[in-house]
Every structure is written in structure tokens, then in C-alpha cells.
Image (cartoon, rainbow, N blue to C red; front, side, top):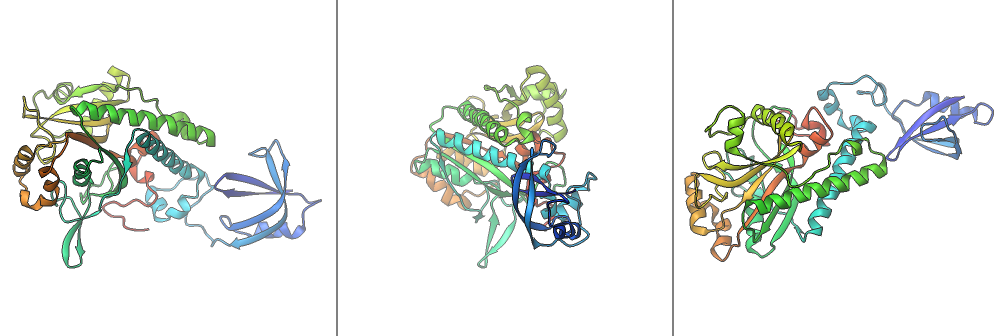
Length: 403
């Protein structure tokens, strides 16, 4: 008796060759066929309590559709692991591993949950340009491209366009799309190309209207994803947290006090965020929490952020964190033309360079707000991956442009 394991998208099937009933040529064929070759097996399915799926296939006909070369650059069924760079250098082989496929089944389930939640709340799904003449926060962290002999940039965010759609009367929009950041980061939490889940809603009263919408979408998404993954037997189903709105709100000032630096006005470092996560999750018991009321000095480049009228040294903006990792950022936008123009100048940007964007504000713009949510980071923390590169099929970073 001999066995072969046949893998497809649904899982692994055991092929059983029995000396008394199987054509002897099939023994030789399987013995000579390298691992990871593509084969087609026709036969009968029989009950087998000892087999992985409770059944086995008794082959009657086998065809080798494509024979794999030897040796493999990377083990698929082997228990011995490989360095991440080796895995990414041979990513197609790495993606054949059931454990790796499970990550992208999780990603698919999250996207399904996000889309269902948005659509059930009356959002329109939109697609904004990824080739731009100008950027949301300037061109310092953007990739420049030659656009028919005219300088252009790859989009780092759909920020300006989703705001313009509020003026068009769309009122609620969402987009799932790639974004690009030309930052020379070399960390386990940053990518050069990443997927952003952006939402924007009109006729809000303040930033908390935006937060309430975002936390509801996150709760819906996790519930839908869990149901889908449980049905397919994906191992990540039991790892998904239950999101329980409302998420705690923690002011920036309180964050600095917890960090032992009261009164500081600076960006939170990854180490600051990690320490805050430990403190806040232990205190509140909720892995999700909002950081709110950022100093204007910290968000000065975000010219579209709404400054509080009674305390303009603060913006009605937030970060959504999960256990010490920022997942989303957003808040109430500035919809008043005069104030927006002043903010643009304060950020060191010439308003004339944003004329197409500003036209949307000249002819009626409702109060609005929204967020950008990092899908890759969400997958990374939920799957407990050590490196964000594992959350994308073919990741792009400072050094990797292939495969």
C-alpha cells in the first residue's frame, strides 16, 4: 500500500494505492513524480476513518499535467521553516502552504464584512484616481512619475477626492484601494504599497459621529468574518476578537500623562503606542480604543483637519488603535472655505496648487468627516503575524520590487 497527498483549494485529499486493486503503473508514476507537480486523479471516493478528511480516493486514472522541477526552492509540506526573505523571493511556492493561504482567506472574509457593513449603511463604493497632480499633504512622501511629460504622483491617500464627493452630494462613500508612501521605512509595520479602507460621511456634528460609524463598521466586519471563517474551518475564526462599541476614548493629553511626559506635543512613536496599548487594554479591557483631541501642532500638515472653534490649538481628529498599533486615522474635516484656505497656508502649501479641490468648497460643502483604515495592519494583528509583509500576496517595501 502507498499514499499520495493531493492538494487543491478546498484542502488535502488522500490518494490510496492498494497492491491488490491498483494498476502497478500508478505506483511507479507516483513514485517518480516530484513533489508539487500538478496532477489530475480520477477514481472512487471511499470512507476511511484514518484519512485526514475521513475519506480516501482510490485512483483509476492519473494524468501529470505539469511536473515540478527538482529541487524545490522552498519546502511546502516540510516542517522546517524558512527565513521571510527566502519565502518572499519564492512567494508563489510559499503561497501554496495551507497556513499561508489561511491568512488570505482571513483577508477575504474581512473585506466581505467591510463591504457588507458599508452597503447596509447606505454607502456608495467609489474609485478615485491614483495618478495625481498634487498630494494630500504635499509631495515629500510621494512617488513621482512621468505622466506624458508632465510630473505626477502616485496617490498616498484618496483624501481630497473623497471630500470632493461630499460636495457632489454622495454623502456616504467608501473605497478599498492601494496607496503608496515613499517613506524609506524598514520596519515590520510599514509597507511602500498598502491597502487602505477609506470612508467619508456628510452632515456630521463632530468627530464622534465619525468614530461611532467606524467602530460600528469594525464590529460588523469582525462578526461577518468570524461566521465565514467558522463555516470554512479556517483556524483564524477563533482568534478574532469581539468588538464591543463604544470603544474607549482617550485624549492626547491623557496619553502623555500616562507616558510620563505631561504637556508634550509630539508624534507618538511606535514605542509610545506599544506602551499605551499595554496600559489602556489592561485598564479598559477593550483591545480597541480611540486617541482623540490631538494638538494642532502635531497635525499641522493635515490642513483639512477641523480645528475646534473654542480651542483652535486642538483638532477634532483621532487615531483608532488595537493593542498598541494604529489601525486608522481620521476625524472631522474643515468644510468652511475661509478657514480651510488659512489652514492650507499655515501648512506651507499654496492654495492655488489645490484649485480643483477647493472648487468643491466654493459652491457648497456640508460638514463632513471620515477616516483611512489600514487593511494590511488589521490582517497582521488579527493573524498575529510578526511582519506586515506576510499580510500581502506580493509585498512592496524599500528594497523589494520583485516578484
